[in-house]
Every structure is written in C-alpha cells, then in structure tokens.
Image (cartoon, rainbow, N blue to C red; front, side, top):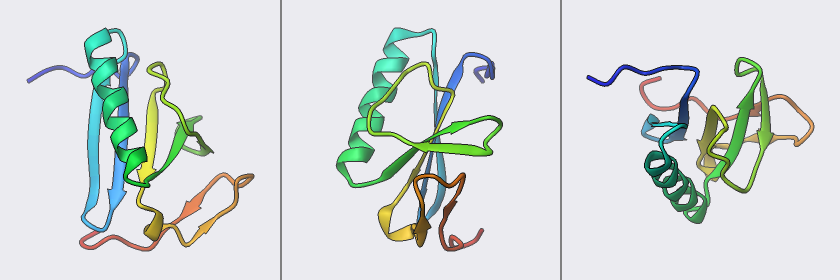
Length: 99
C-alpha cells in the first residue's frame, strides 16, 4: 500500500447521491498531476460544482480551473446543492444515502 504524505498529496472529494468518492495524487509527480487535471476536467464537463478547500476545510472557494498545487478540491453534483452564496464559507447539500 502506498503511504500518503499529507504535505504533498492532493485530493478530490466527489459528492453525489451515492456518497463521497476520494481521488488522490502526489503533487510532486507530473504524471499524477496531469491525471488529476483530466479527472477534474471530466467532472467539470459533467456539470459538477467545484470548490477549493482552504484553512483546515473551514473555507471553500468556488473555482473553474485546476491547480495541481491545491491540496484539496470538493466536487458536488449541482442537484445536491440547496444553498450556495459565493461569499459564504459553506455549501449546504442534503444528506447522502447511508451517510
């Protein structure tokens, strides 16, 4: 099993009606960064909303483009968002099945 280094690992959390799917990459590995960008772009093309997570997950910023140096992204299916204010520090979505 590959050991995960939190200082160099990027992650995508994909939230939808099935739950939370994680995708991680090594931010120092160009091939993994490129694969993460392709995954990011594919989710954007499907209409997912994306937020860059900052400051221990307490702050989220809506973004449209990938930056391989970002530590964590949160993707949510648009039908799951019941409230979003760009200036707010949160996104409200309904409870997922089983969670």
